[in-house]
Image 1 (cartoon, rainbow, N blue to C red):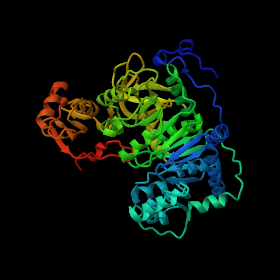
Image 2: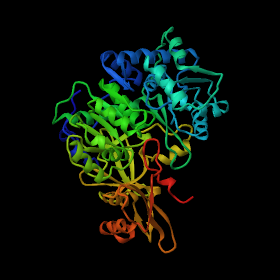
Image 3: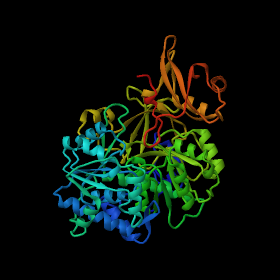
Image 4: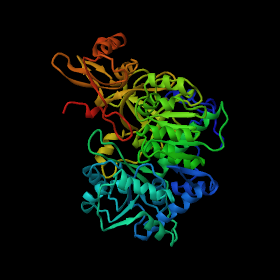
Length: 567
């Protein structure tokens, strides 16, 4: 279906962002072409059978092989007696087994529960019990965590895979090194466990029963980070994910308005597939477009990451500010040929202007900032990808999406006024799993999701985040937004990373405290305070500065301000 240019579409006064759309992006999505993620997956695997779908550690998997192996997973799961709607947990980093298992679960008519492999036993137990997961697939490196809690959950089936299980002959060497040389697999023992290879063998002897899946059936229980309390499962339907795939698809294709589109796109998948950002923007978009995803199991290993970038001509690179910043400061990355980069998509946290400007100067490809949450599957807004402008905003609401900036009483605010960013669209979750009370708090009466992020919309429809509600610092009655302080501090050439929080202060209620990792060992507190004084009004300036060798981060690489707050 050919999209209608925004100028030809009816516009309401509220939807001012439509006038800022790329010419090929429609105001509203056409009807969905698929009834489920499984149907989309199977069609893509047929259409692109001989193309590479995923590669990892030097081993590639075609779409044909991906279909065959995922079918075996689905057959085995159905053979256990699991029925439509049952949940299956996946606790793996970015290895070939991950997409094989995830799409196998979906094809069996079941619900995927993505689990962070670095969870503590307490966190894992909560998520397994909350989701009601009946089975779990886990990389052996983390099997000891499952062992500690499985008896206190409803999990009846544990499948353990080794890092080298899908790497062919090389896999035997990899497993030996991981287990015996690097000793990365803590001892574990679960008599109930089945090996991944046994599952593939058993699944190869059966037939996958077709399951009628509706658009509004659950596909994923995607657990939030729990930053506002106990971790909750966002109920994401097949419709949510398919719509967000289409929303991103139109946006992605507009990147080729001014340059030739490669026949096969190559995505760098450095963000973990258990995170909603990579799940949709990498895996689902890659499947839908017949693209090649280069899986990075450990993006913190910068030499290995740079080696993979050197090996492949990467076109699409979703990432976080911290990862971009780390690469900019890597000597080997600086030497690479970046001419193939077409779209670098920044999300998960604010992209700092100094980082964006250095990135564009070094690579010639701008960082396009977008915004989303687990609850929005995830993309809700994005900057245009057919321009080199860094707007410092999170961009425009994507097709069929409305953004309303509201005050605490739920009233719409005018342009430029700061309020809570509220989102309505087909990608917004069905609610929180088994938590109608939390769902009621998160959703407005007219169907908007309250993001908990504070921001404003400008006259062109671009949205600017100023910060999380809970992260605001109140200094003598004035609101201070940590993002602003951090961006100014990051402009100093001696600063590598930083994070700002509010700490109790007898005079002003709260004061700004800045934690800093130095890029220049000679950087002093006085020099940084002088820099901030030049760029921030008095009440926004850091009163306290603490230098550290590193800052606490989530597995995705997001700086965790909550870990820096006084206990």
